[in-house]
Length: 83
Image 1 (cartoon, one colour):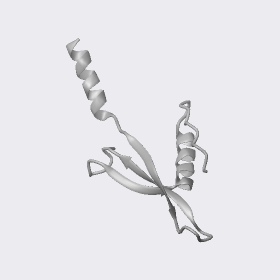
Image 2 (cartoon, one colour):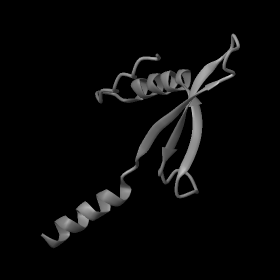
Image 3 (cartoon, helix red, strand yellow):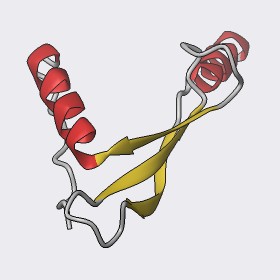
Image 4 (cartoon, helix red, strand yellow):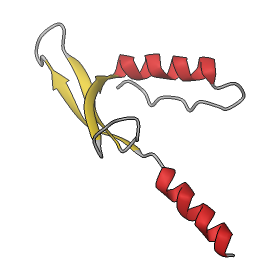
């Protein structure tokens, strides 16, 4: 039981979370308006404890395509609708 619980603790420490929130319309009222989203992560790939950036929907589409190419047999979830 002791070594099993130690493994569980290590898994919890490695958990990376990503939150997508706070949609904002940029250039509102113009022909080139768009929505971007705030993305938070605690990934250890970044030097800061948490990282925050804003990204457009089309960048999520690009990321999903890249994940699909490299996922093999692992299913990549659908994106929510653009609107």
